[in-house]
Structure formats: C-alpha cells, structure tokens
Length: 334
Image (cartoon, rainbow, N blue to C red):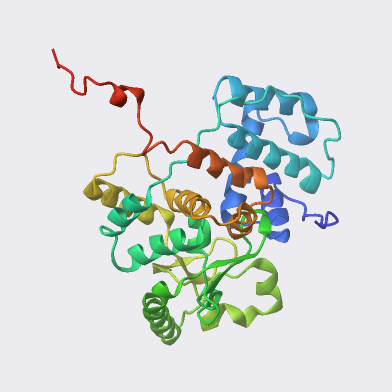
C-alpha cells in the first residue's frame, strides 16, 4: 500500500475519507472506519487523536470488550480503523504492540442448511431474488459480492463467475453452473434495457472502482460495468455528487429471506451468509478437496475453511442413540 499520500488540510474526518478513497476502500468500509474513529474520539472526551496514543487506544478497546461485550471481529475492526487513522492520516503509526483486553466471545459454528432444506427454501424464493440466492449458493458468494456483480462478470462459456475487489481487495473465480444461465441471460437483458432507458433520460452512470474511474471516466456509462442487479432508483453518489444507478440494497434480500424461511417452516436462525456456509459444507461433504473449497471461497488461511469440517463432524443424523437399542422399544409417557 502506498503510504506517501498526504490529505489536504482541513477537518480530520474529511481527511480520513480522502485517504480511504485514495487507497480504494469501499464505501461501506469508509462509513465503518469513520464511525469507529468518531466513537474513539468521543470516548476520550473529544480530544484530538494527535494528542492521544497507545494508552487511549488500549482503554477504548478494553471498554469495547468489557462494557460492550463486542465480538473479536468487531473489536479488530475498531482497532484497524484507529491504526489506519494514525498510520495513513496522521502519519504517526503506533509502533508499540497494543495490549488491550481482548474480546473472548466464543466463535460459533456457522449455521448450515441440509440440501433438502436448501431445496425447500428455494421453492419459496422466485424471480430475480430467487436467482440471487441461488447464485450465492452456487458459488459460495458473500452477499456483498453478489450485489457488486457487474454485467461482464459472468463467463457463460467457461461457467465461471468473476469476483472482483472482494474482502481484502482480492479477486477470484468461482462456479457459475449452466443451470442458472438462462435466468441470468434474461436478467442481464433487463439490465441492458434499463441502462438504455437511463441514457435516453440523461443518466446512465454507475459507480466504478476509484482507480478505474480516474483512468477511464467514460466506463461508468459502459453496459458491461452496470450492476447485474441494479437498484430500482437513481441516487446521488456521496463521493462524486453524480446521479448514478447503484445496486440493490442488502436489506431487501434480508426481508425476502425472512419471509421465505417462515413459509418453508425452517426454524434455524438464517442470515444471507447461510448460502455461503452451506455451499462450503456441501462441497466438502461431496468430497471436494478442502484446498479447492478454500480457493473458491477466497479464504486467505485454510484454518478459516476448516471450520466447515467441524460442521460436517457435528452432523449426527443416521447415528443411533443407545436408547434405541434397548429391548423395551417403547416407553410409557406417565
């Protein structure tokens, strides 16, 4: 990462946003980092971060663990935001190791649906949204990866799906089975028609990765860069002030999944991530090599992928309890 960029003089949070955009952080990460930095400042009685350092950072992180009982991931996100502030914005990196009290909330095993439950759920997910959920399950996508898919990310000939600038700003290729191709062609044709309508009405812009937007400013109107699942409304981009058509919001998918879960009679706690978890577990159960699954999921460390082997090991259907082997067979309810 280039650390030589210096933001323009001005308000601290404007500088934070400027540096985040220079380094091509996503809008969601930008919002998250800004919020964590503001919370850190408020916790320390609104003192300027340049007048604080390691002790204040440790006290704040310990507060999150003790008083807020946040998860390990949440505490790490707060730490990353604060360290980014000191390293990239204030140019005063914290060299010493941060020794705050760490969160110890146990990491739960992921919720995984059986193949039968997946089939039942899909019976209650139709149309465009049903296609979106099937894509997530087919390739092990995160919901953010699904929503950021562009028209040109689908390789029909090779049955591959290109995931660009995902978690950790990494790219990867995953599965795009032919059973979804017809539905996708219809969806992409609708996107092209909507884009042509936008162009005629004086719009037609979408949001591009920062580096690409600077290098190819006209690409924002290119059909291939349009989101595969565009929003129903045109909105103002907070970064450029242009009017753009963004992708659908995750909230809509959550609501649709909740309704489908209820209609399917599934009692497990479900989030949109359940399709990624189920993809990984079912691949391993079908005998796919764990290294291959790791690559398809885009995991940096295979230990992250190994959690799904624990889910597999916890599946006990088909194993008989010793109670079932007793000769008495049936028991009185009184």
